[in-house]
Image 1: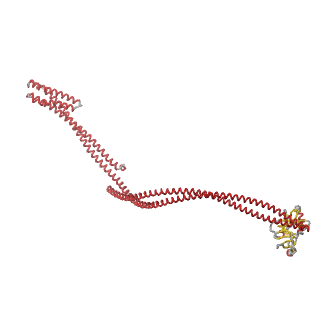
Image 2: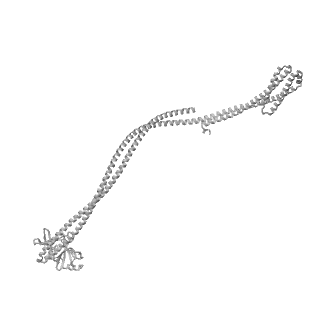
Image 3: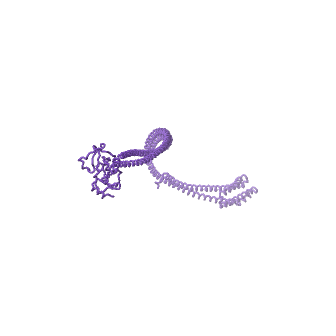
Length: 486
Length: 145
């Protein structure tokens, strides 16, 4: 349990134990001294009482001596002791009564003594008055009567009893004071020995455990100092590297600052170019709008051409029908003319002229047939041309349609380009603004890095100092360890 | 002579033998008929055998006949299918020759003479004897009408 206590606690416990012993010794000593003081006071009072008793008796003796001298000589100068004794005895009885204040038995004894003093003083006064008035003889009779002597003896006995009581009290007080002082002396000696023994034991225990704990702590401190030294060394190296890195960062930040400024200028130029591009895109959009209208007009014209061409095709087909009819008529005429020629030949000479006519008709029919064939060919050519034209026109219409769609797409692209360019402008402006802010931030960072670099150098210096301090601490630990172990 | 185009050659038919020139009529093929008869058409209410001359001469171009020339063969009619009727020509004796002996066996019932017209070969067709009598009875028997 003791090993788990702290040094302060152990010292406090040692001091507390010693303090308890000292308090005990002090208490016993105080009580003994108090008892001795009480005894001394009682002795003083008893001595005072004995003195007062002796003074009362002495004053009464003085009064009696003065009375005797006057009675014997009749010289009033001998009355001086009487007068002073009579005067003093009253004060002394009052002081005695004061000393026995609260003691009813003693007060009764004082009452008795006071009565006897009064009786004796009255007897002395009577004898003096008698001496003055009646002379020596009359006075002698009173003295010889022995009344005064009786009073004086009773008083002397009473005061002797009271003095003996005080003497007995002093004896008891002396015995008690001796016992008390012997007890106090024994208690002080024993308590001092016990206190010394306890303090030696506590001191040994505290020193042993404290030395052990301090040794362990110093050992720990020594190893911690070594670790701190190593850490400080590493920190010093790190601080140097940090200072170098901060210098590099500062250089990089300067380059970054220059780059940020270039970016800000580039962003401004980009914004200007984007604004011009936006204007061009808007113009392009308007041009495309007009182109789209032109394409729509072309498409309408092409559709009109297609309609006309299809109409032409239908008309050609109708002409073909008419030509078919003519061809049919020509063929029929041809056949009829041939048959007429055959019949005319069959008719002999009479039909010869008719056969010539019929043959001419046949030739005409042949020519008509040939012409119809040519016309048919021409119509076929026209129809083929119309078909080709229609197809080409439709292809053109489709191309125009596709072109229109492409123009719409181009218009949409221009709109998108305009929007994108506006976005680009805004973005470029934001980039410019951001880059300016970034430049400001980089400048601030640069300043901060300069401060940090300064702080790194200071840290490096501090770390070096810490290293020195750690080395000194390690030396101190070793010295302290030697102090404790030795 | 009536000159007609028969495939790659010209044919000549004596006008006197011709009954009529007409558009081709509907023609039906007869089973068991001679191979040179392409079919039978009803012309003027009469079943008339049709001979495609270009096929018989081996000069066909594949195109169908555009004219029928009906010939009187006795009291019967025979229709010749030709590509086109060109017209009437008079062929001089100098322009025609007899069929050479080497070719005498080539359709002797069909070709009477050979000639030229404007530097083109003309086959003068024989009007009579195109179809034998026995074949006529067979045609009458198999005719649909």
